[in-house]
Length: 192
Image (cartoon, rainbow, N blue to C red; front, side, top):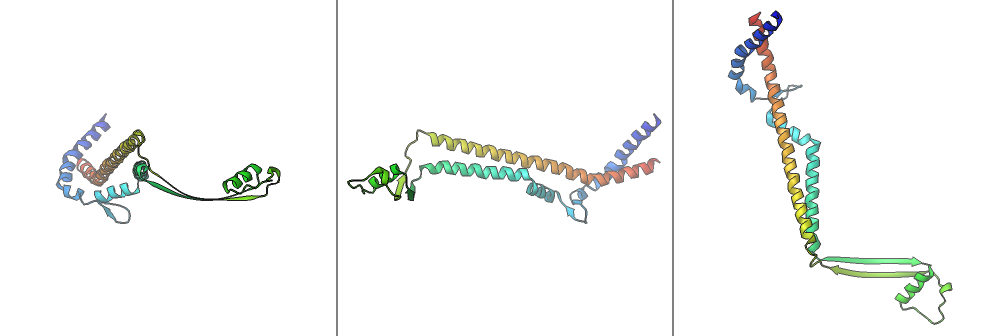
């Protein structure tokens, strides 16, 4: 029981004696935390480092870029398309050889399907198309992708805010730690 009361008295003394000392040096809290190697980090440095090095932030940014690209892709369906085709086929299958000869208007009298040789077929073409109406399908896909982008942006902001809050709490705990230890030692020295 006596040990417990000494502890309570020590804690109370620490608050009474150490509290004003910490508050009097509040400007030192803003200076930063000194880490190994003598480097002093400010709160802003810690936050920037946490945001820069967090893989979850990078993943959400990549997903947001992907969502924006899908949104643009859906919107691009209404743009005209031009396709150029160049194809060369070679075959010795009798039915295809015969069709190639028909395509090339190379059908002669006395053509036997069992004695057709190897044949090449060349096909060159240009195709253009433009989507004029799709019943609103692409419109709703674009709306879904836009809402997905908004949701991902909100998730990214939420993650960044959670990181900032966590880093701020840890930063101020680290700042206060050495001062709390010093105040506790001073209080214990005065009590003992």
